Length: 270
Ligand SMILES: [Zn+2]
Image (cartoon, rainbow, N blue to C red; front, side, top):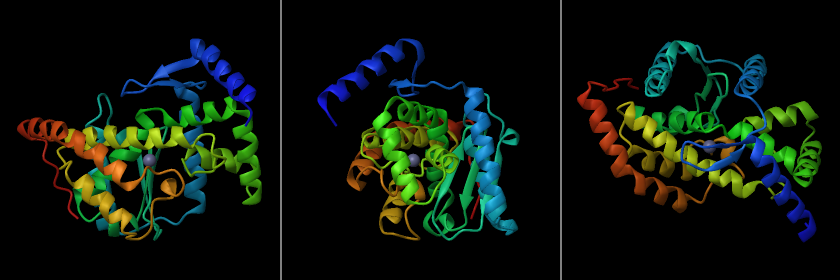
């Protein structure tokens, strides 16, 4: 990409920032062109599409387990009620989970083989909800709109994968790594690190053991059932991720102790 083009994009970001920048929960400036209402509508539409195409699990024990963990995580967020969130367990061997704007959470049964206890499952759910809290979908789509080169790269990659424009957009919103042109990758690593830390605080506030987050990512890196879809091209290096978590675990343990003192002690299983 030419220097001129990079400068033009930087200028466009700065100019638009004056009108449409927001701040992430960790204090990072982000560009967000869409309203929350708009993102929730797109998230809900995406979820309907996934539900229509993916088989659900009917395993009562798994449903109860996943619902217990997600309800605990949602309960740790200010002003959120578990009953407002739709949680679906999909029968799918890939170790994956996702959360979408519009209060939607999807968990694959395959994740339950990699997340070996409630604290590890809470790690993944907290991470996914962290992406939603930090408005990452909005930022991702807004960035793509800013970067014409990124958009063109997305279309080329998507076309080579046989996806139409709408499917590309939806996959992009899910963090499925459609944008592989290179332009947006550093932002995505930022998103991953941010979701890790927001998720860690959430799980700790919900009474789960934050130290288990490191074990979960160890399991994940050992290929237990495969990496979650969203991580296939953009996840931070394993050691970077573990270092980031370890730095924050002492503070998270404090949050967990405070929660337990208030009687917030999850007993979800499995
Ligand atoms: Zn993520």
